[in-house]
Image (cartoon, rainbow, N blue to C red; front, side, top):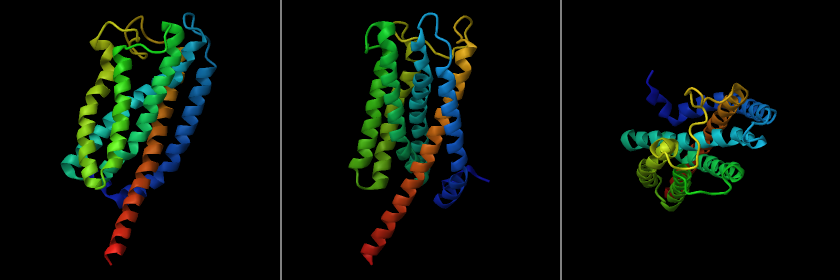
Amino acid sequence: MSIWEYANPVKFMRISGAILPWVVAGAAICTVAGLVWGFLTPQDYKQGSTVKIIFLHVPAALMAINIWLMMLVTSLIWLVRRHHVSALAAKAAAPVGAVMTLIALITGAIWGQPMWGTWWEWDPRLTSFLILFLFYLGYMALWGAVENPDSAADLTGVLCLVGSVFALLSRYAVNFWNQGLHQGASLSLAPGERMAAVYRYPLYLTMLGFFLLFLALLLIRTRTEIRRRRLAALLARENLA
């Protein structure tokens, strides 16, 4: 069986409808359990209770970057193979990614203020994240500005290619520039830098919850976009008749 068979809207609707309830349930369980577990963790000896914002900030930041990269892959599939489901999936993912980026920016500011003494700093990672958020907004605005859906998919696919540079910069900015206030990777495996297990395990659970939450929202929104495309086609036929 070829993976491209799932690009068929009918098959996608059938399979996504079957797995969606399980994904929603998994997202709810993992996210709530992870956040409650994280809230009950002890205070950090350096950061106090402020460290607990990590259970929102890190999953949101990781999803913000990876959602854009997912949009890149689906946009490339559209540009190369012209599968409509992939273009609609990229369109459906954008608002979720924008919200994740906004959560990461806000929680980062709340976390950074007591640690750095400022709400904002033009740190390489913070700046690239802000630019990524603007790319999300531009991507959604471009979809809304172009009337022809295929033309909109083409233009937003190109925009996604350009924005991917900043998605990668957001992920690896700390490695590129040693200067800057932002810490290194929270889940580093390097000796002496690895997060304590008391924080690491609930963070893993929350990250899984955020991934499942994104997957659930992606399926719901993509299914909605497919139905909207079908409705537009039916209305167009009626007008021609």
